[in-house]
Amino acid sequence: MKITVLPGDGIGPEITAAAVEVLTAAGKKFNLSLTFDKQLFGGCAYDATGIPLPEATLASAQGADGVLFGDVGGPKWDGVEPTKRPEKGLLQLRKALGLYCNFRPMQVSKYTAHLSPLKTDLAKGADLLIVRELTGGIYFGEHKEAALVNGVETASDVELYTKPEIERIAKKAFEAAKLRRGKVTSVDKANVLGTSRMWRRIVQQMRDKDYPEIELNHMYVDNCSMQLILNPKQFDVILTNNIFGDILSDEASTIAGSIGLLPSASLGDGTGLYEPIHGSAPDIAGKGIANPLGTILSAAMLLRYSLKQEAAAKAVEKAVETVMDAGYRTADLATPELKKVSTQEMGHLVAQALAK
Image (cartoon, rainbow, N blue to C red):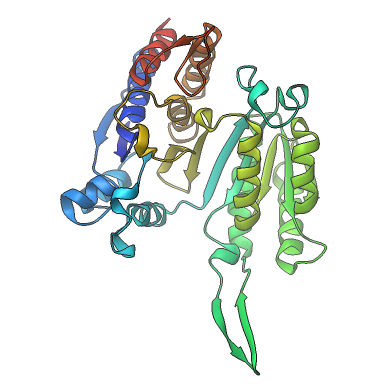
């Protein structure tokens, strides 16, 4: 099984190195034949080749079973031509891999519940997965920039969805729910939008026909945004469209108390892309203080969703829990009573816990 590794920029090389060490340990423990192909991507690729996504990198990703990605970008490339910015390479890669589904899990663990902006007892134990459609909706509909229409400045953006687009993202959500607690909350604005009414009808039909074992309820997006604050523990899998998912996933990540622990996956019908949700943090790059756990947990998602190795994925997640139970923290979460470790040391500790 081939994994393409794209360290990228900033802290990317440090955090992906830690995740690769953990994946290697998982491979040994579960007798998995894993190979790693490290490629240039983002700003470092632009510096070396003049473009953020070289052909060799794209070919490697397209031929891989999964892609582990760090981060791209930084002030160094702010003046680069827009079509060659590091972030443009990421958009190009997502398009080339046909990634239409974004998985954003959010867990409020006992280690970070006190850091949540919500009251600790309200936040602690929340464990949900946002399944966001990535390639349709208002972001990809027809856009008309501001112009005078009958003497009035006017602009418009079209929300567009097709039945196949809704069916394929709903399938991802239902299948994910089967691996979790069996509950899907489909979020829309069906009281106002025609696309949402179609979305709701298709999702309900799919559940009734193909997933009767899944508990499905529907919720308006404004109510969902409120319910995430009032009672985040009521949610298991949240299924929603592109723009609503964009907003709700950022809201949910704030509840967690620390973005350093949050992974994500972008999925399609082929190779998946796995990355932490935080940025490249060039100000701390090379200092050995970045938190690699979001990347390590992204590697667990790679094991689960791309390699279909559920036992190995759970073992990685358990190893992270074991290390945190032992009181080890990187600089972002360290306090005087805890054991402060470097990025590399955290990777070693998780790999060792996994091996046991």
